[in-house]
Amino acid sequence: MENVEKNKVGLLFNTQKPEAIDMAWRLWRWGKSNNIKFLLPPHEASAIALPGVDDEKWREESSFAVILGGDGTFLRAARYTFGCGVPLYGINLGRLGFLAIGSPESAENDIEEIISGKYSVQLRRLLKGQVWRGNRLVHELYALNDLVISKGSLARVVDIEVRVGKEILSLFLADGLILSTPTGSTAYALSAGGPIVPPHVPCMIMAPICAHTLYARPVILSDTDNICVIPKGDARNLMLTQDGQLGYELLPGDELHVMLDNQIFVRTIQLTGRSYYDLLREKLRWGFNGIREAGD
Image (cartoon, rainbow, N blue to C red; front, side, top):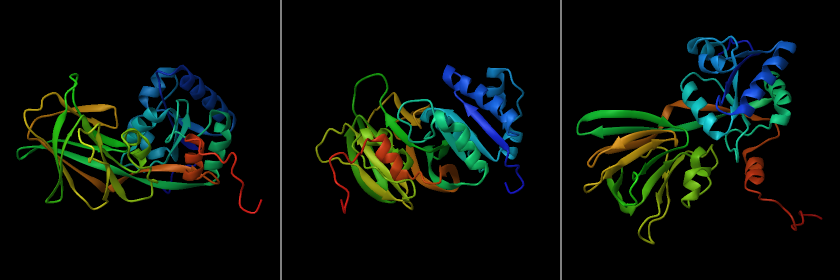
């Protein structure tokens, strides 16, 4: 991406969210007045009736991308940019926002700072999942947040065997199982009792969902481990969900192999003076009220 023009900025947004459409128009008009060209892929361009570029040209010419929406929009943008190296910066128009961290009020100023180089890039690891049915690979998928095995519409437990390498780790009787990256540690895995893990820590998180034993607890696994998950018994209507957005059927006896990928990364932008720990304090309301700072 060395020859990409800095003032060419990719723009992706939630086309179902009126405030995202309004913000896209606002940035487009501001960009025309400030010699900044926003590149729209076909779907976004058709949603607001503006000129767009094809997907390949968008990936080649965008120096970075601005994402308008919540974390769900950011996850879709991550899938759109897998492997092309375009750094992503999200403007949060959703709720909590651990991926889309920018504020609408400072959007134009943030974009100017990024164009001027006042930022760092964080490499975020992806989970690579492979579903094997006998000797046949039926699905290969990547997740920035998590891969989740869960039951369908009936409220029944799932019997799951988990292996790490050649070792059997556990037999879970639970409502499901979450396999998460550090990025996803503040998403579904957190609700299942998992730890908060900064995105630069190389590991995976495995968290059972409502396990039917007091001894089942989340486990941290290394970045070199290979996890194998096998649904047991006559379990039906099992779903494997990718980042909470795409679903795949799992059959009894299927093997889900999960590892951290070493070749594909999602690049996210971190502005100068705004760290991951600042984000945690803000989003989780870890304030200092009533606590005197050292030396006061």
